[in-house]
Image (cartoon, rainbow, N blue to C red; front, side, top):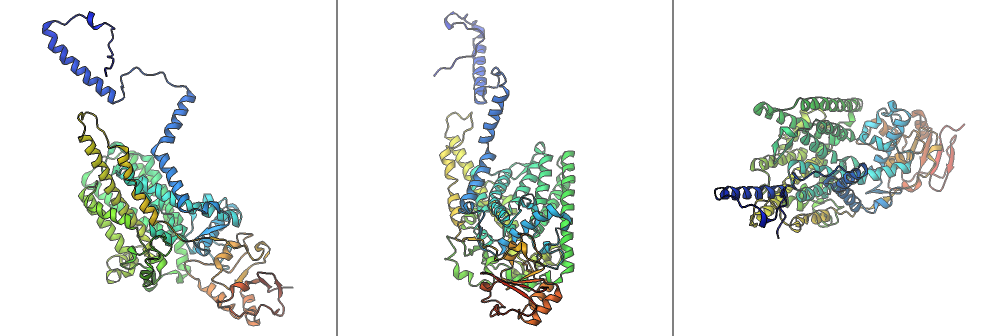
Length: 631
């Protein structure tokens, strides 16, 4: 098919003057050159064509919106949200009356969100002393604080609204984990399909099913996202290396702030993340001393500002936790305690019972674990297979694969805690003895987050190599190789197929539990209040106390304070005269007994029918309320 020539004169070919004989060869050569240049302009979009008049304001805005809607990051964000909604369905239908997994830790974390919102609205300086764990100080720091979710927590004005916020954040953790991992893998140089599959594996790894009650553990997307931002800001990728022209100081500051936000959610994940960033910083510093790559002053300034803000924020939060460690020595975990929760050699191929695909099949293997919820840490067989293939065949260089393998091995050894070789003496124990804050980590197995991320990078390298080879084959098959082409879209679409296997492994059988209503009007109780039986129902009591925030002696945290254990001990035998007098002496004003919860507890067989002398008793269908200081 002929194409028109962009001649400046519209002269018919038959009437055009013939060139002289001596100039014929030069004219032919010039024609070939012009043809090649026209081809290049055509392939590049004809940049020399006359510029079109600039569009109007509204048309330009419409074009910008259309480009944004079709951008890779808009689609990635949309996919992350849709996947999260689908994988947690039907929770989105029951945001105000159901909670994932159980009514234990999820209700505790819902209470923490509610308390943060209440304290920030009413008395920010008093956030450390919660209404639960009366009369103890700094009870807010007894477990992970979820401080990073403070903006959302401000919307919690009742138990129901706090529950809605918790559930929205729960769904959001999966979306952010996918998006953060996808951003990191794309920044490192992986192709779209490889990044999508590996990000899905990171967000929906089977081990997360056993952690469904721990919002602070599921909230790991900020780790990958912060690393992606920092890498982008420094112009670094695994495939492209360091590119000085791609340094972006704004991304560096955003990365440091995201890292601080991640740390503020909880020290359990935050402390290892700080040491990871410290390790990366040392490696980068040594590389700079050896190679002296060109760094812009803006890059140095961004790291100075961002790193300072991050360090000050970490030190402030760590100092508050150190106060608790000094005031409550019982909060320190010894080696035997940590060993009970630490993984074994087989843990990373054992599925939690919540897994729809592998849960029943691995029941016998879980029976040998001392605490299966923290030791069944299957990373996913699909991810594992792709990662192993990535050690042999990948877009990453051999040296990069070696470093990734070594990094994975180090994480594996540390995450086993005292259960690694020689009681972890050459891995975890060094950190436990000499790294500040590491002795506060009760569950080393949660470092599986980093092992999953390393495997995801290797898996993305495998699929990226396949995509690269497919493009190369397609290009070689062309007769005219002047224009670089890619494999057909249907070929690249096949590389997304492992996502189905990853999601299949990530399906859960865990229920979404209906949240029980408070048995009494909490806002009308005169505190301090003690609910019996104490212990098993304490997370419910904390959640119910969001209505009015009465002072309650009940509470659940990562440890049991001695003073709280003492109050529980004094309540044994209640409502005997001795127990009533002992509780009065501690300052307890009201005792609420829930008869339906007594069987199987330390208070089983309690006499709730008699009225003790000098005590006002009110009975309802669900509770018996004792006013110990009735006039």
